[in-house]
Image (tube, rainbow, N blue to C red):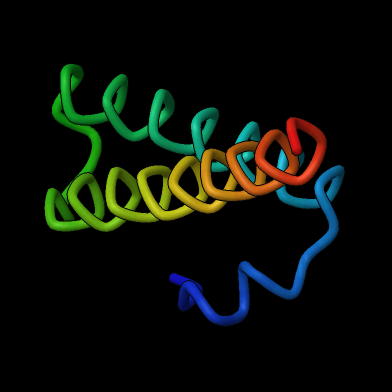
Amino acid sequence: MTKATELRLLADQELAERLEGTQRELFNLRFQLATSQATDSANLAKLRREIARIMTIQTARKAASQSEGGE
């Protein structure tokens, strides 16, 4: 799991790719849990938190760019 400070250093495109990959990983983990193949259910919460971090950073960047352009 990456820290928010590390995620803030990424470019917008890299951040979007990281979000997509993490969402795909979460989907696969949910599927494994449903079929009783996964053993580490704590990973589910970690992935959800990472997705939330990425989306928060994206939202903050979007709000910052709109406030700069709106003035």
